[in-house]
Amino acid sequence: MKRFAKVVFGVVLLVLIALTAAVAWYWAPDRAVADLKPRWAAAPSQFVAIDGMLVHLRDQGPRDDPAPVVLLHGTSASLHTWEGWAAVLQLKRRVISLDLPGFGLTGPFPDGDYRMSHYSAFLGNVLDQLQVPRAVVVGNSFGGQLAWQFALDDPQRVERLVLVDAAGYPRNATSMPIGFRLAQIPALAPVMANVLPRPMIEASVRNVYGDPSKVSDELVERYYQLTLRAGNREALRQRFIQAEAGQGYSRIAELNVPTLILWGGRDELIPPANAERFKRDIKGSRLVLFDELGHVPQEEDPLRTVAVLIGFLEG
Image (cartoon, rainbow, N blue to C red; front, side, top):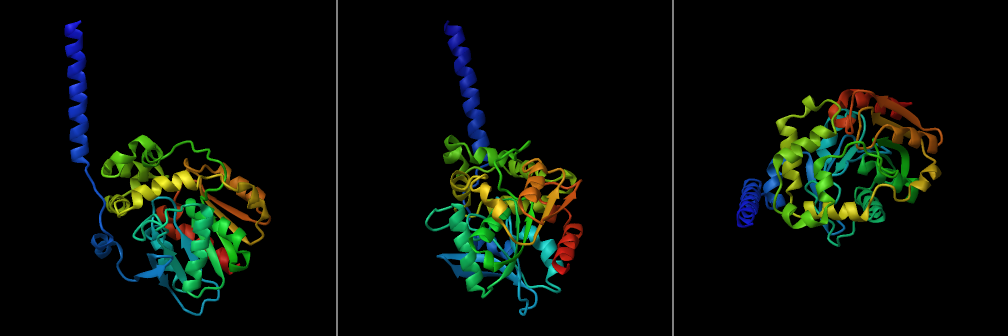
């Protein structure tokens, strides 16, 4: 019995040592936004005071566009996911991209409210601040859910709607990034507040690409560093709690705006069956599927995907 107790004690001790070493190795406390700006907020980035936050955004292209294109990123992403699209669109259109509250350099909502209704009101305030009465609203993943929610809340402000692997219906993921899974475990919150394994971020990004070989070290570093922005990790946890996918999806069929649906055929986080459901529910909508792309087609193959968007805008 004593021998067995010694063995158990030894195993427990080894586990504790391993955990302590892992925590020390992957120790990553919050980083101040001022430290991140030099690398991730190069021109034409700007910070605009809206709703008690300094919102990181880019406003590019001609000022006389009657319906600017507004680009909304997904969970744990940032405005950088749209850089390939913005570079092309800005030649003829006014293009506005921004870090949504809780993500990127914008950081958390001051009041900790991450419900979809709050995000929708925030988006309206952004358009007011930028003097945009009417826009083409484009959203990927969580940003897609915000896009269609905003189109329901303020239909007069949405000229066209573009849903890119958009959230909305109850979750039916066949694979979920490990970072998202861990963020939804309450018991891990105290640890995850100061620990962030870079390999976990890499695995999460590779998980949402149709071709993981396209995931570069620079791309992983961007996702990693922006996750460390002060307040973002707790904001992500609260966002999963307060704004779950599947809230209010029964209203999607009420949308009455020209809608383009773009989807990656290899998206395992929000599978293509969701694209077909959006197409059925939104009368007159058009669906384009990119068989070999994943959950972020605008990032994985910006030139081919933006060409479809341009055709939709000009058609």
